[in-house]
Length: 235
Image (cartoon, rainbow, N blue to C red; front, top):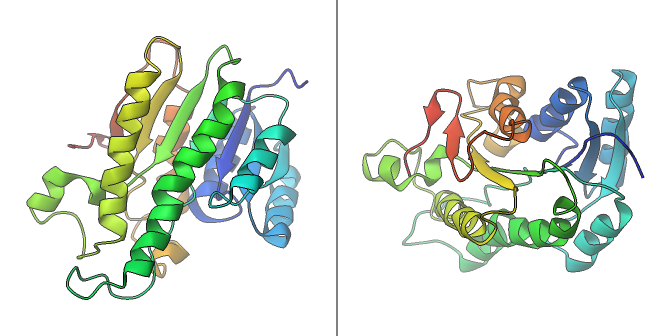
């Protein structure tokens, strides 16, 4: 069993997830690159290792029960789980014309995938001395900002999936109170990734900063919060 603090990042073969892995690795953590694409996962691990990071690959499709269970079984230790994998969903997402299959697909990854992965990894996290769960959300899921017209374009799949994810996270906070597991949500901001056709104005390194900070909180750090670089995001 490894004696190094170990983190697993889902969707870590590219974008924000990759830079979360790189940032945690630079801090001395052992990092598991969770990704479903074998070639991209191997390439990411090789690149991280070349940069001096103690990285290893974890085959992981958050939408598949067997894949998630196998990923959990492959780990000998886990101290930090970063639920980063997410999708926007295809096509226009106006409420009046939405294809419900698109909505189901978005929820399967962005919400059910997080629940599936978190539950599979909890037995490992419970054995950690300083367990942390960070879930990458978005300020477009803020009902306060949505109601003020400050939460991006209309997207009945993506935006409400993050609202749902925020609420789900608070349920975990309530159930796991007193266990020592710190659970927080991170908004990376509008980052240029393939999720948005690289239209964002922030870099992936900038987007990774808040998740990295929450993944390495001291024992007197917050839990049950929703954070961005500037501070707390209103619910």
